[in-house]
Amino acid sequence: MNVRLVPWSEPALDLLRRTNTPEMRRWVGGPESEEELLARHRRYLAMTEAGDGRVFAVLLDDEMVGSINYHRHDWRGEQIYETGWSVLPPYQGRGVAAAAGAALVDVVREAARRPGAPRMLHAFPSARNAPSNALCRRLGFTLLGPCDFEYPRGSGTLMRSNDWVLDLTGPARR
Ligand SMILES: CC(C)(COP(=O)(O)OP(=O)(O)OC[C@H]1O[C@@H](n2cnc3c(N)ncnc32)[C@H](O)[C@@H]1OP(=O)(O)O)[C@@H](O)C(=O)NCCC(=O)NCCS
Image (cartoon, rainbow, N blue to C red; front, side, top):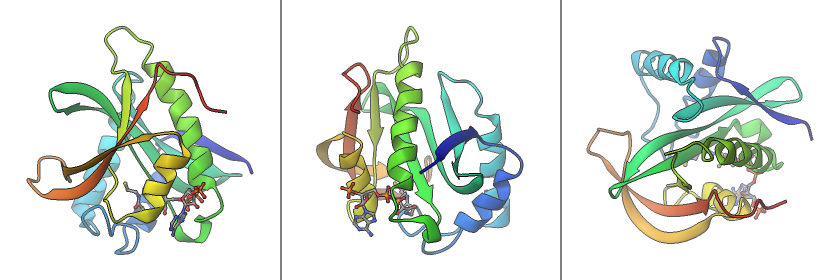
């Protein structure tokens, strides 16, 4: 399977629109308005600093089928990297997210080598999001336990999540 990550770009707006469904956004606050969607797209385009975070479109062969990202986050008084992902329904269940996640972990491992960069990569899927929790396990994350996680950031809305962590300084899984 040929899965690649490419930096977020103008054409990826169409991917964002196709991701903006009740099904796809079930665990992350539901569909967004056109205004929110465009603001998200602009935020993604602006994230170009490797050490702070990036958003990637996931390509299966040459088709955009999902997205994956990492960014810095302040968590319980510590700077961490956080990741999140999505794969469009027709392409789910075939290992696309597993391949994209492994590629993302490689990218974040590189970022974590910079002086002062976070050393831990966390994911905070809803405790009820079975595929996303399975993906964390598959990628070698360790489950720290349940937590209340604010999503969207700054909204004051708390989501019952699982806190998964991967030590970026540890040996890479192959
Ligand atoms: C989470 C998501 C990205 C997984 O994408 P995917 O390409 O289907 O995942 P993969 O095929 O690579 O499978 C990854 C793991 O999830 C498991 N999985 C996939 N679908 C599953 C399901 N419906 N129920 C339980 N586990 C599932 C797979 O078995 C695999 O685990 P394994 O290696 O232990 O067998 C996809 O379901 C998605 O986009 N969901 C909607 C958006 C979302 O919730 N994003 C996460 C926000 S934190």
